[in-house]
Image (tube, one colour):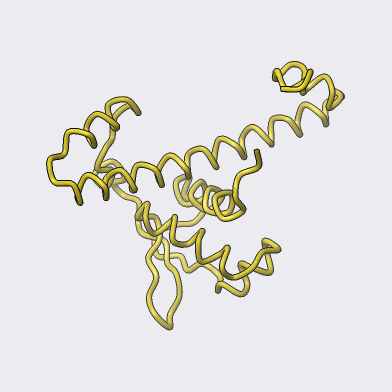
Length: 149
């Protein structure tokens, strides 16, 4: 199943922010420019920006634009910096139901962005394998995607 365009776009920008390609305080292009660049509607861009805001990677300033939040030090900003099972157990243990719901939503967003990043890595690896002479059928078979899977 293909992931939503806004998740893919947010994952791309999250990767660029985390690896420093987009430094703190850098301004992202306007929603209109991003929509044109990615061939999607402005509503898709708004959803992608919202995912990035939820992850505290960008902030929006009304009538000024969207800006990258300085990621130094990243680890202090992560509220749940442990393995997935531990993350889920930690969220489950929060007594206040609204705070538990907020933490669960933040964790979902975090993992959606990570999945988007991993999807991009996988796609690049598949394209690299194809560029090096592997057939799409062979790639699919090696990834366990053939025979109706």
